[in-house]
Length: 401
Image 1 (cartoon, one colour):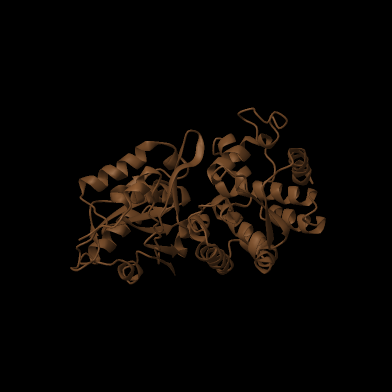
Image 2: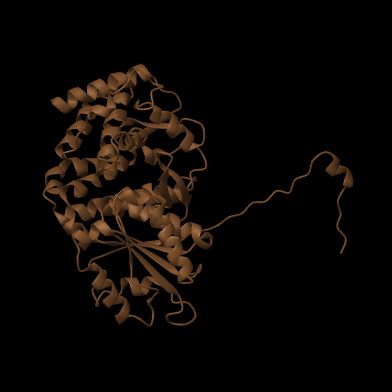
């Protein structure tokens, strides 16, 4: 074998160019009563490998969910035992705290990693995450970082998880006082949306997930926004069929964006699906996570919509329709943390520090999504802080009216 190269080239510089294309395929399933013995969805999703029961399964459950579904652990064990030839449960399900607490400390992450190691799970094993968006983030990060990737099956149990975070490709934990500072882009093996879990949600959690549907409607689908605007009463009254339509369309729009935007892993700075999120993420931190993610995003969307209006990009009629819809869904549009230290942009508790954190999260360049109409978005790389301050005061007026 003869290798042809020029030694002189190495006295200056040399490079080998490489291009890798990787296809990811996963399905989002919609079902009801996943762990009913007659429901074979999970069995059909699991690939048992060359021999039945060869692939081990680890289940991680949101502890907050057990307050409303106390029989869930027993149902899981009964179900996996009944289908034991395929579902090889490594050990009893791990229980982690629900909400942001799961992402704020390393304890839960270490527990999952230690259990993976103890039970000898490999890259052909499965981790099933059952819970809200924060728990899905945590378990997804643990799965993605153990053995550089163990197959993850997400079972979102909240509106927010089923229509947004649970169907995407991102996983994360919080660190250094910043939301989602540590994370990965790792698509799940599959997602299973079980509508039965939504029936026991608190009204607050039921409502919170609707914010992400409003978001994707505002930036991508005016007709979908009209559907939400028309059905605010039905959604408040928890009409299941209307909610299922909302979840399906919202998940569909998110998945279409991930597949067709050309930047599924967000290597650039354009992130339209984060409309309203720079302020939302900042408010979560400033309120010590007393605001749910969806509640904070609702405020962030109202703020960015108002700012879009002050820039002349959005009509006042459209702004009023957005604000009216959010208020009809019982979202609070103003909290004191919005205005604290608002004129002191370098203060650690100033809202606008969130712009700096958002820029760093994007990759160093600021790129904000704003509205040019309901269902039409645009991107800007510069902000007028005085207009944003004006938008904050206008939000306070909207909240009081």
